[in-house]
Image 1 (cartoon, rainbow, N blue to C red):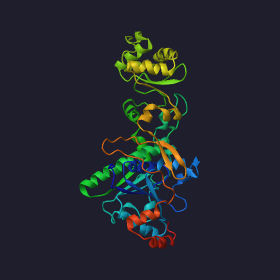
Image 2 (cartoon, one colour):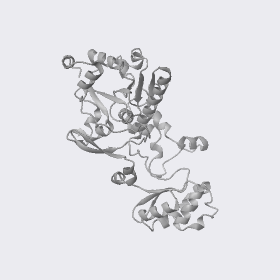
Image 3 (cartoon, helix red, strand yellow):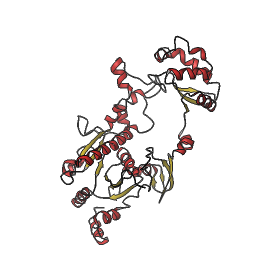
Image 4 (cartoon, rainbow, N blue to C red):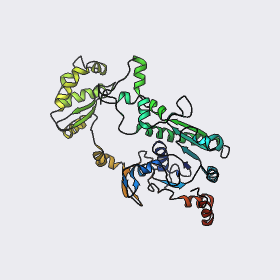
Length: 395
């Protein structure tokens, strides 16, 4: 079956998370991704635990559908081979600190003279411009600086990092989107371009209504736990055995919720008859909702609220997520067989295309696993020519 990005070749110099996440998305959708790694070391993530048969589960979860080639870009012969590769690819992706590729003579301005249609994507902590561009960044740094941490955590408690690496992941998503947009423009004009994505920019972009609320009210948003800042009730409640998330996002759902909880008298109560009033009177309202919810288990409330048409859900742990029938039905947990590590369960492909669905075709590569294959297939090098290149220690 044809894949959506079949025929697109990507040279991937990225490490750890933001860049590899972007190129994994594109590889899942059919792009040929050549992961270019440092000889003897490779992507830093290869050293991250836990390991299975010497292979990092972290690395394997982010680098499926890619081929690994090692190349020493500090040697002139390695740089020249890299330039030769540039003539054969559509996209280059890197997540070095700004200026690194320029010092190597391999920055976008240099490479576009070799391949004018080249799309050069750079994902970095703070972007290619601005006063912070040379600063180092990790996920927790940009979550802190980008405002996300300031609105995450329990009300009145310490601010909290989001439990998944949203600083990296959002930058990876925006990088993939930028590459796709640039490919579309190239289809129309033949012209390549640079895609500049900042982890900090990406955090600001997902602040959602926090910026809007501050701009309108002048009040700085603070952590409020599992509550929604603009909708009530829209939060988690304790049940007889665990917790349940309930989201009554409009007045119709508010009425249905009250009926399901057996507190119909609140529907016509003038203190709660609109969402704005429910926000204003939240302190009085919450215990009135919490009391009946405590009387039944989460499973019982799921059935009752589902029948009433009120959005709800249990607060699942990771094991429960992996066993969830909806998650399984959507093929969002996929077993992938790695040649060294064996079977590893990993997240599936969230983008479901009707005509050109993505697929997980191969596991993450061993370091340098495909170097000979790439040199033979792309350049037509013979085993003897490959051997001569290896003698120069550039792989």
